[in-house]
Image 1 (cartoon, rainbow, N blue to C red):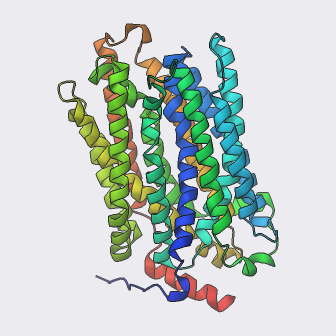
Image 2 (image 1 turned 30 degrees about the vertical axis):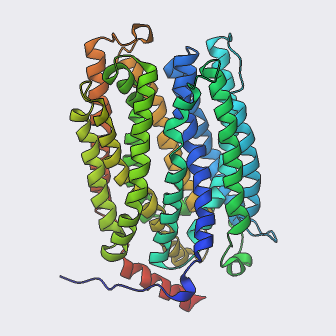
Image 3 (image 1 turned 90 degrees about the vertical axis):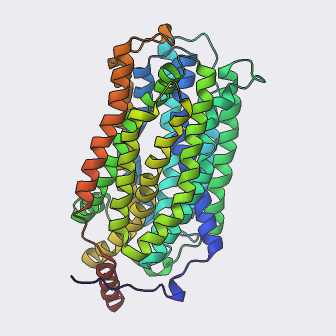
Length: 465
């Protein structure tokens, strides 16, 4: 059997730790911005204000469909920007300010409105917020792809990103519990105060990479001919290797987010018998177990990827993720509620590989793209990557809200839900993502870029520059 050659990172290709840390703070902003609304929306709008879960899911999905327009536009603008401060950082600063202000505004609404008034407010503010998030996130992600040209250093940069994202994510599973503190008049006031706090954190963590990360190789692309939006999109979306990787990521991520709406309902109405306040603690601990295990898995994923390759590591950890979904069959147990923390630990392992190695592999694909087209287009690739994920999340949230209605869930029954409703919730919540991850593994087995192939591409690019 042919043994693949292993290459060491050269000193000139290493990125200083301080810049990796600064980039990591941007990942906190990206993580909080992408997922905090989903962590609060159903609790505030459905359970607190009585809005249909389908409408709540619809209000979260429509902005992600808008990303089909805003993400490619932002990638195009960023790739073609030629400011004295670079192609990425000016947009990141603007996005950081706007997303902090808009996140806070989402929860500033009174009681007594109609269901459709709440829906309209939530939808309108969410559209504005996710547009601001795009203005920050696409250039920030593109910056991470171009900070180094080294195969392994790309993984290390994304490892810092994943580590900081999960440090920031420690807060997310507790957002609902924070809104329930006795110091607040009710859950809505709690959401308003917590939302304002998250908005401040979003703004600060967005500022740090914009101010302290360097745009390496900007001089090389400053004279690059500007690329039209349609040509850039067509080239990106017809890159077979890129779309193959995106399909694997899409399947694994969308399978999970489809049932993310169901998961807390199972904890509340099955494991805890309708006790919302007690369930919020277990939801919090389950999320914390996810985050802490994600932090612990970053180092093994990074180490393994630099020794056996990104593809093998990616597939191995997706297998652990699959095991986590299957384990829900035994771990959702009213007699032993603390077992709910086990599936998140296993599922998190797959997502560490998904985010760390997925982004690192896209950077390798950008080299392949330059070899074929002669242009560096990290912004376009980051935009399409983000759009595919957001579209998957949009469809997943919409389907998730519909699944909750399909199960026959009735909020007025509290912990006395019909047995068939709870059973269907559990089957869907474990089975759908397990099937999706199995399909993702099948697709990933055919990914063609090895360390040696990426090194060969880089050498050819050096000769052509």
